[in-house]
Length: 367
Image (cartoon, rainbow, N blue to C red; front, side, top):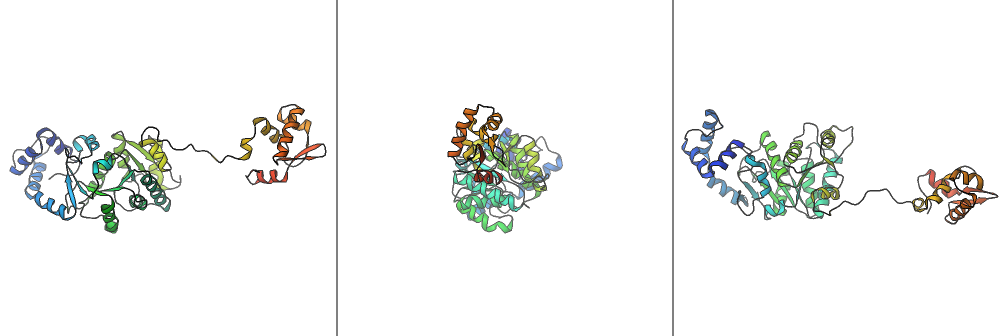
């Protein structure tokens, strides 16, 4: 009878209960507070045409069930939406929605994405699935589809939250993908079987994705992308908001970069996502460049090595002055460096070996 996210209807249900609201709509009584006469008349007309028994039969035929607040399978984090909470969810698939939602992450982004975005989304989803996390997205083209496929490729768990009936795969080009998700994971929606999507329903669907999960990752999004609505909803609900950076020249990453300039956290792989949304101690590995042989030298030895000219031999006195140490100390360090292959003796002077000079120029270091 009502559209998803209707806070006025949600308030009626909270204050009066479902049965009383349905009774008043069915009987066409005086309008409940918060709506105009025209709006009430429209709701009464929709109530007269509602056929819940037909919807339940269509759901059973599609292998779906109806889950409402208070059921054992109801994800209680959806209650954070207040009066905008779904009145119920149609669920297609075998797993328990409540249990899966406890350890889930949303991965969303642009429909018209780049190859970079597709690769980033699929890699993130695969990494999350391999670590036991459920990947939630909207089943759309682009980033959503890449996220679902990445999780499925890892034989992991994924949930598609649709803006239409769960028996109506949308977009049509993803019919096979959504069928596979229903077989391996879950397909979820607020609208009864047979209902079609509209632009407003896509936006309202995003609040469910945000509330259902521990955090939302936006992979690619232009400044007007609908996926940013998911991130904003996640922020309002005090969920983690994350973004994957892209090229600064790409308009498809401009929306993500705006998120990152605000309050979102930059992430580049699954371990960094889990560090935010996971349990205490789920830390991403420390990021650092490769350890080079030169890094293992003692500071005094590195100072002597740095004091040697790159194109000629130098005396011990010159090297000691450059390293700010004594000549005896410099000689001891030079013999150590010679044993490691960094320097060689040239008469009374010392010079970098050819191997050392070539490796430094090429950005490599000798073993």
